[in-house]
Image (cartoon, rainbow, N blue to C red; front, side, top):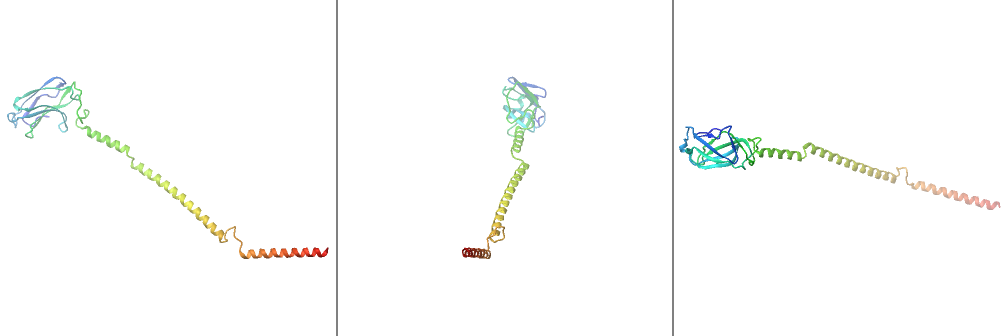
Length: 223
């Protein structure tokens, strides 16, 4: 990550290894491009991780640094972290948009963590991974559309079966009512005797009774 102009960082450089707990030196020089070091004041030096496109602040190394001082020292805290070769120095001037970078370098013998930083993929924040995992968990815990369709179809079948049962029950009820109606109207197999049938039966009974009396009288006469 070369400087845009002005500060050209000589140390740290690619291939150098800083160690936690040790005091390291940062050196730079004027690259003879505007802005000149003599015009750069109140510079802020920061230890960063990640890439130039995805930067994670790790620690502030120094502030109010004069560009013309050309060096400073920094004791690397052992609780920085994690270990890796994804570190670099960023130089900014708060009063302007000036920014310069060192090359990437490695820091070992540290045991800390960086919030939201993925050391396996320094250019991708953990929030993206977390969001993907959350999305996956969410999609796996939410019933799929096919499951909903299956559930709806099953409910529909159950309702259809109930409707069919209700319809059959209604049909049976209607048949019983029809049969009862047919019986009461004399159209069934067990019909109620009509008044004409009752009259014929009564006449036959009377005739049998009269004949019996006649036979009884005749028997008395013969004796």
